[in-house]
Amino acid sequence: MSTDPTGRPRLERVATGVPGLDTILSGGLLRGGLFIVEGSPGAGKTILGNQICFRHVANGGRALYVTLLTESHARMLLHIGQLGFFEETIIPDRLYYISAFRVLEEEGLAGMLELLRREIQAHDAGILVLDGFSAIEEAAISIREFKKFIYQLQTRAAIANCTMILLSGAKPVAAEHTLVDGVIELQTKLYGRRAERSLQIHKLRGSGYMRGEHAFRITGDGIIVYPRPEALLAAPSTMDYVTGPPVATGLAQLDRIMGGGFPHRSTALLVGPPGIGKTTLGLHFLSQCDDENRGIFFGFYETPAAILDKAKALGLPAARSIAEGHVEVIWQTTAEGLIDEACHRLVEAVRRRRVRRLFIDGLQGFEKMATDRQRLGHIFAAFANEFRGRDVSTLYTSEVDLIGPVAGLPFSGLSLQGVSCIAEIILLMRYVELRSELHRMISVLKVRDLGINSALHRFTISKRGVVIEPDSSNAEKILAQAMRQNGGMGSTAAADAARGNEE
Amino acid sequence: MALILVVDDEYGIAEVLEAVLADAGHEVVTAMNGRQGLERLRERRPDLVLLDFMMPIMDGSAMLKAMGEEPAYRDIPAVIMSSLPESAVAEAARGTYAAFLRKPFKVGAVIDLVNAVLGRHA
Image (cartoon, rainbow over all chains, first blue to last red; front, side, top):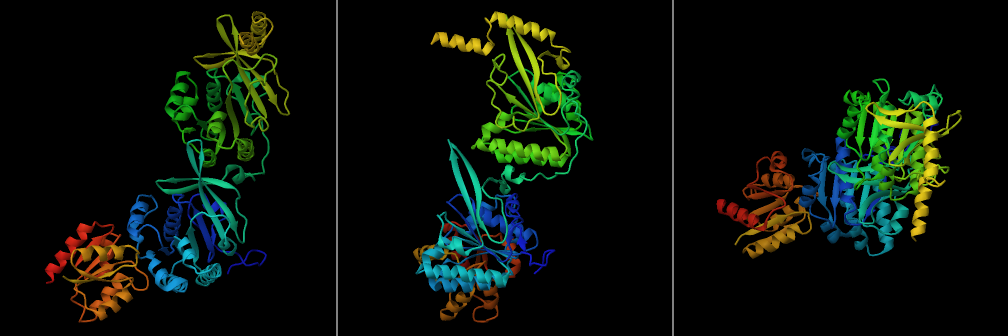
């Protein structure tokens, strides 16, 4: 047995090879340990058991898959054969399937133990999966005999250095849970009409693990687990960083208003109603990207082709950055989406591409996918720390209703989902309705540790994108006229008053 | 009527084959692994063996090999059954089998194959 730097015996691990699961398990299952994987029918136990076997073989090991009262091997292989990890040529030489139910029926638990011992030895198996473990409990004549069987199984696993995985039906805390080295539960939960799969480690002897429920999918390549991003990023990948000069926003006038640009490695939030120019401003931000300063456009609403078309139509340098690959456009649909999967996709892209500028369009996409909105604040805080550590400046958008905030109450109507607490900058875009025309205004509401010009500035969307006026004189005139037009109230207040009168 | 030995570890497969072959007019004995299969063979010599490939204790290829080493059983036709393709079992079985049956199979295909093999070895 190997030892750690302090001379203590190191617990050896065997990787499951299931994407995301080894991260949750702090490296994998304990070699020679005994584990229970439990869940209701259809939870994915058999796929998980097979996937672990196939991955173990792919890493040079040998595995044994033993069934009790389950579907036939032929049917099981037919189903598993559809998945990407399946490799027929490793059966039977490196992965062997046997049924042990007849032995259990005729020779009882003692016969089962002897069969498993012999077969592990005969096939030199480093992984054993026992599918249909509930049949063992049913065959035991007493709880005592059942517990004794598990104890003996654990002893044999340790002696043979074979990691054993018992696949069992879902049940509340049971006697066997106290005896094994780990318990993994697979669940399916309904949220409205939508179902989400999740995985939870209830116990893992000998090491820490990532607690809580972690979402997973069964894909064409098998199971992919998404460790909760707020837990995964609880400690940022990099803590050692220094601040630098402001980061240009891509709009010279906005840089002047903000005293040079966004603070280095900051998180900014751009709030405004639909159609006002938030995405366009994001494209200005990404127009600063090149091969050394790569960017990501992570959006929920428009396809990569539509984004490229928009950048081209406005003649923005972002079009070239996208075409040359300096900016990657990632489109994440919210339909049937897992927030955890979206978060992993984003973090993985940032890590893979050495990104310096990140534009996320917008917050509501995450909100739509979240089954537990309490998590959003923690997720965004984790993002902020991780991206800051990776020298990334981030700009989020958030949509407010069409009328926008009330004059004099700039945060009214805003739903920030926890981002406001981690955003160093909040930019507010709003419409001002004057007679038959809608005017666009922008202001900077919050810049930590920096002196800012918080005055409203009028802006337009021209053929060159967003154009912000150099001073606030026009904005002041328009706002004053709008106040008079609305009888001294902001547009939202006026609308509310009108609704009140009708009622 | 022929005596057929069905050797399969999977619960349900041997039972179904026993019922189906009995309906087709054959007598059937079953075993759950190769070692038990050899014991049944020595008790009563069958006309045909239906033999699963992956089994505990003694697999199908080991039983075939043992049958080949005993002159009294060498000429008993064996049909290999497996959920793997024939290419995966052919090398291990070394061509000493009369026919191959891929699982999952249809009942009619089993009866036809058994009767065809029995006819060839009559």
